[in-house]
Image 1 (cartoon, helix red, strand yellow):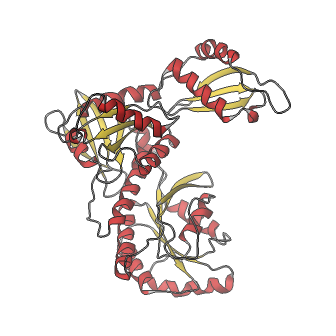
Image 2 (tube, one colour):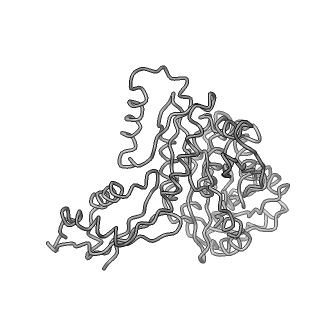
Image 3 (tube, helix red, strand yellow):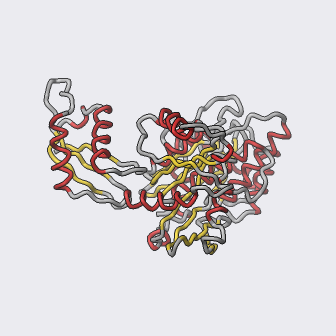
Length: 437
């Protein structure tokens, strides 16, 4: 099912992060009275009456100057308008209308995207009456709310889920493998996309993407069609450097939600960085197939075992996430880029692989009996009696046992390793769920 993206915009210190935390029931965003505290762009999911949408907190921006600061706000709103399915424009009831609010409202009014004005810090009806000042923007949907207490947010969510498109018809009809090329800015996403879509081996057809301005591409490779989910390239040059990262994050988040397999591109000159790890974590959370592709390998001076040592450093940082394949490529010279397609096909086959219940139990239960879970705090023995696989889009395994809440995390990692050693699932996050027998 297509999951819409809703972006929160507004000037600093109006309560965007507080709203994000309230909607997602988390404390992911740092909240403070000082403007510009939130530097990272934060993503989360919101569920309301059985409907799920993704929310993006654009956060604050620590400016070098007032002019640069205002430019950053305007640029983020433009990016949000390009990429989001709806906009939550947060203002401050107690401060009232500011010139920067009016600029943002002008951009929203001229767009075709659904936009809601949330007049925040209206903790009671008296402050709620101040929302009338914001009707001057010419936008119909104005709500007085309190992000801190949750006042009137139910009305906002009712309206929002009523206008968002949750249709899954288009996704259900699509049978071609969807591959997303994602990564930090300037790692070579555009170069790799263009190299894969070269005339030598491919026939390219543009098809509409999931947003108005996004274009996915069809790659025909040796008689088989694949969809490259669009993530690469700025359609409008960002005026503020930090907003290039914002744009990249929005695209990455959308692409991960829509793909089957994610090719996470690393820069050979900088290696695996924190932002790369956040992307990997997000792909794992969404149970997507994952490939790590180290680009610009042609720029590295080669010595004996260079690739092996480089891979060891990456795997050391990845820790227990040791099932992701790593491939060294060059989008410029096209070295090994087509191996990515072959590898994506293999990983998708692994995602859809079904292990018969009898085989699961015959193979794993004897190993589990040799290395059983530690006893409970009361000294009771935990016994795993039965294993079965469920799930259509990615592998989910149920392990039926007693006292499942007392099975420690390290034993769950042991079970996953045991499962992978016997049945593979390279590049595929799996879900292991312990259920009361």
